Every structure is written in structure tokens, then in C-alpha cells.
Length: 81
Image (cartoon, rainbow, N blue to C red):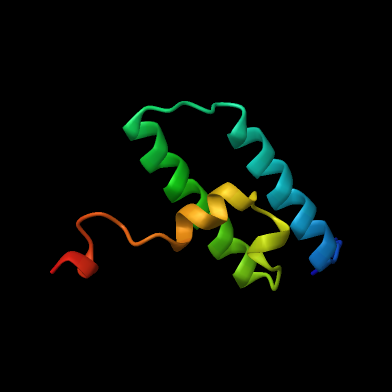
């Protein structure tokens, strides 16, 4: 059985740039509506999670405003109970 598998390694810097590109694209739809802000917070949280998974610091991917938003306690979450 012959297989033609080409392995291309991904390096931390490559992954950081890919996540930054996704983040920059998401910033293009900057809307102040509440639903949009909830989506943006969730999107930033997902990117931060992916950054941590691949060993990239979220501070190197997200903007300072989104980092601060992720640090705020969520409304109606466990903090309120």
C-alpha cells in the first residue's frame, strides 16, 4: 500500500498569525448592539481558548478591549447566584 502523505508542521508563530487574522476579520463588524456584543465576547473567548490550546498567549492574539471584556464577570452567571 502506497500512501502519499505530506506533513507540514505548524509552528506557534504560524498559529498566532492565523488567529490574529481571524480576530482582525471579526473586528470589521463592530456593532454596539447587545446581541452583537454577546457574540463578540463569545467569539473572543473561543479565539482565546484556541490560542491557549496551541500554546499562544491570548494577549498576542486579541485586542486589549476584548481581553478586558473576557475578564469581566458575566451577567447572570454563577457570580450572581
